[in-house]
Image: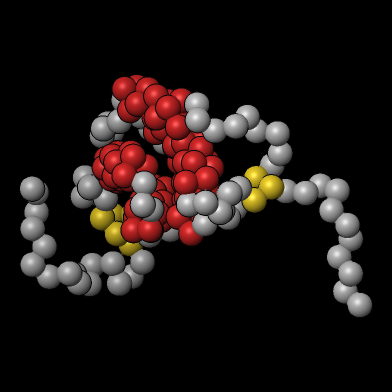
Length: 187
C-alpha cells in the first residue's frame, strides 16, 4: 500500500483545488476530477446494490466490477496511467451474455423498479452513463486509455441486464412502460 493517511483532513483543498495522483494540482471541478468523482459515485451506488441483493452470482460479478472501477478511478486520477485493458471489456461481455441468456427478449421499454436491488441497479446504470459522458468530455480534451470509455459503455449494458435479472429474482418483475395507457383522470 502507498501512503497511509494518519489524518483525514489536510486543508490542502480548502481553496477549491485538489491533488491528482501524479502530484499535479487542479480545480476540484475540472473535467478530470469530475470524471473520477463520478466513477467513485458509481462505485458507491453499486455498493448499495451489493448491500441489498441476495443473489450470490450477481454479488460476485458486482464485487469484481467495484475493483475495476477503483482501477479506472486510478487511471483517471493519474494522467498516463493504464489499468484496464481489453480483457476487462471481454469479461464484462461474457457476464452480459451469461445473465442475458436467461431473460426473455425485450419487447417493451423497461422503467426503473422491480424491487429494491433491481431499482438500485437501474440507478447504478444511469450513474454509469453519466460517468461515461464525463470521461468522453475529458477524452475530448486530454489523451485517455482507449478502454476507459468502452468499459463504462459495456458496464452500463451489464447493469441494465442485471437489473432485469434482479427484478425477476426478487419476484417483483419488471416494470414495463405502457405507451397506450389511458389519460390520467385528475378530477
